[in-house]
Length: 383
Image 1: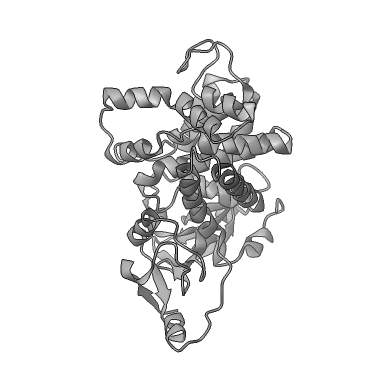
Image 2: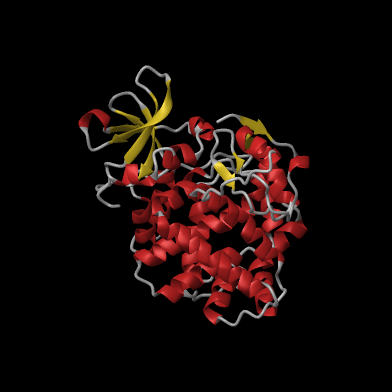
C-alpha cells in the first residue's frame, strides 16, 4: 500500500470523508463516509499523522466508488474519545445530552466486551495520546475499567451501565483544565484549585440541569472524591456510596499509571501494591488487581530467549501471558511482530522492561489487526 500524507485542506469537519483515513502503517483511523466531529479532532489527527491510500485517491479521481472498510477496534476507541467530547459539550443541553450519553455508553460497553484485552491495552499503553486530551482519555479509561471491575464483582447490567455513565461525566466541568495541566504541569492557581475542589458538585448540577434523574449516578459523581471517615472533598462525608467508591478507586489508579509532562507513568505493579496497601481487604481493590493480572496487555517484557515483547493477551495463568515479540535476541527490530506463548520455557517471562519508549512506535493495529484477533485467540484458551 502506497500512502500519501494528508494536510488539513484535504478533509473537512462535519463532512463525510470521501476516502479512508489511515495512520503511517496503513491502519484505518476513519472509514470512508465517517465525519470529523471538530477542529480539535482534525488537529489531533494531523499531530498523529493521517494518510490516504494513493490507489483509493486515484480511484476517487476516476469517479470510482471506494469500498468501505470496517473500522478496527483501535479506531473505534479513538472515535469514542471524540464522541465523549461532543457529549460533554452538550451539557447541560437536556435536548441532546441524555441521548448522546446513552450512545457513548453503549459504544464503550460494546468495545470493552468485544475484547477486554484490547480495552486494557488502550488503558495501559494510551498510545499516541496528546496530553491536551488527557481529561477525555482519562474519563474514557476510568469508565472502561469501572465496567470491567463491576462485571467481575457481579453487578447487574443496569448498575454496570450506571458506573460507565458516572465515570464518563464525573469530571465534566474540568476536562479542559485537566488537559492543560497534564501538558504544562507546574503549580495550580488558587482559582484552579477551587475549580477542582468544587468540580464534583459542578458536574452534578450540570447533569441535573440536563435532565439526569438517576440518583445513584448523581451521587456517584458528587461523591467520587469523598473518602470514608471524612477525609475526602468537597463535603468531607463520613459515609460514601458504593459506586462513588468504585469511581474514586479506579480514578486514582488510572491517574497513577498515566504519564504527564512532568512525570512518567507509575509502574503498574507499584500502583497495584500501593492500592492494595491502602485497603488490603477491599473486594473492589481485589477485583481491580485481578482484572489487570500480573502482566496486563500493554506491558513490555524481556523473554528468556532475550527477545523484547509486548503483552497482547492475559493468558490461562497469571504468569503466562500471550505476547508479540518486537525485538529479537540480537537486539534487532522484528520486521513484523511475532506471536509468542510465554507458557513455553524458551519464551518464558524473564523481566518487566521499565523503558516503554519502544512501544510508542508500534500502533495497536500491528499487534491486534495484522494477524487478526482469531490468530491470537487460537493460542489462548480464555478466548
